[in-house]
Length: 444
Image (cartoon, rainbow, N blue to C red; front, side):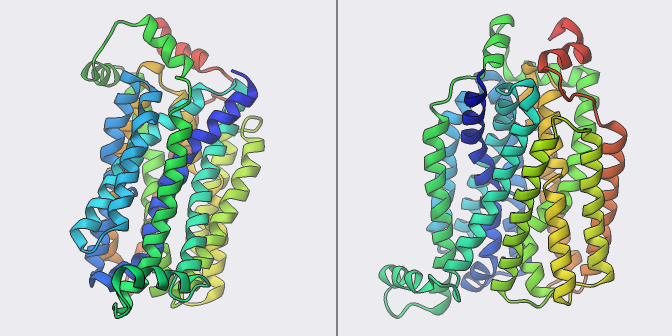
């Protein structure tokens, strides 16, 4: 596949990551507004996180979408999945009670889960050998651009934002001039979700026109027709595949337990533990995501030429340093919060998610490549959902358990660092076919 074609398809498919992270942060940036509008407790917020694109919703979608992509093709997912995403976002936009909001978060989350394994698989299969890491990083940059843009929209449309006058006019047009303050304020979050609906519509139109992965087509021509259950059996019966699932799920899970909490609760934590305003919290978070995008761009220039283990180790050491800072300097002052935001942004640009996406698509054969990623995504986001609920109890209503929660984060990041450092595979500069034959022989 030509270089321009590889880059073009990568950009189209990477919009899935924009919508994934964007959905998480759209919910997070407006969390306080929905809380005030619907009278929600911290436990209610925990359940929103539990079933969202951040956790359970994505977990359910991933286990389904991964094996569907291996059975019916990557293009099959691209043709239909974002229609489900748009439905979920529409539910959130129109929510007027807690069950409706929950349903919207769940449907959106399921769609995110369905799309992620297929998108990472498609990017790797469509990339040149010496551009595979770069293309995965482009996808990761989209994962950073989503939150950055959504936070900017959130600040512009927020009750104290520059465009809130327009939000008020829209709200009063729907609700009447005597609408309650909280009813009007939450319209800023509804409009933020509208921007995701628009991007999803654009992405759907681009992705449904993509050609099927050549590697998927080639693999289907060689093998006999098998069902989803058969592919799952093959995955679990192959010890190399099972060990790889354990390795990748471990490095991604231990990091994602930290990242998922930060993705959903970070502005809320800044406001409660740090004592800053909603606008200040969103600005800090937005700048952090800008740093993630910038660092990822630098890593994209290095990843196909530099030791993967070195980049992986650097990212996690910075992540651990960020949490050490927040414990020692403290979350109560701006200096500690800003230093944490900067360090967490740097680690995000070289995080285990990049290597999970890259190694996850390299270390499995085409027969169950997306399915294996879907399984791991199911494990990771499912356990992240449980952890999100546990975190709300550890953290407390006003951040009184923040220090204990921070130490938990450090332990999790240390596990990810150690396991990844020991098990980092040597795949740089090698074709997917060569990697598959070395690990699985001629069987696949």
